Image (tube, rainbow, N blue to C red; front, side, top):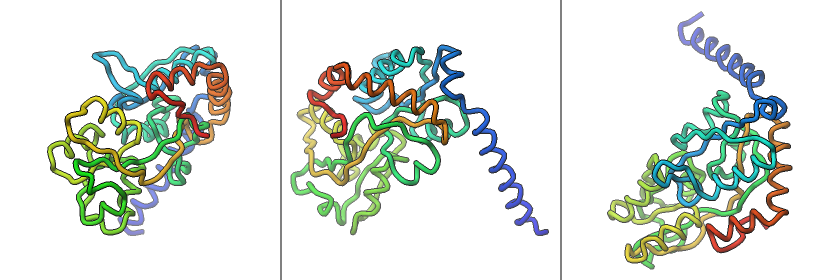
Length: 258
């Protein structure tokens, strides 16, 4: 057996062991309910969905998760860390659930189980000139996007893009536009809406949507008991008026998927 085949075999054994461990360790809702606490991870750098006001974690998704957890009869222990690490940590059972504006797509669905969507949005072009407005206008341009996002994948598929610069934080991608290091920034449409409203003199202009997506929380792959409990509680929050009130507070519109 060659050295390379030995490493391949070890890697396969390790991967199989990891998958088995995840299946065993992911806490079903019954265990979470008994513990009285659910561990939820988010980024904390994606205003207005999840961000810090001083030392306090807040935002639309944070407040929504608090409403859902209350319906589930549990309290939340929050974890905040880089976007790239969120789903990886979920697969390692470092937390029970992730809520951080993850768009549902085929690749992610192979690794995690998504709950029902809690809002619909998509990637929007933002630039400093009205000449860059649509996806077609990005041909020959340099575009900033956050690492690990579905926006990054979608922008890379657009024809004629000169370069895609990706940044660990969406705020860094925005700063690259404001500092004119890139020609355009592609981000969530609600993030763009708030960024423009908070800095009306910065010259940012909202363009077209590059794509539309459904956004949901995620649990470990196959953890159907937790996904089902979360979905039931989310439906109750959407039915009792609290979701509509929260959505109006942050966006002045109802952002649920129609």
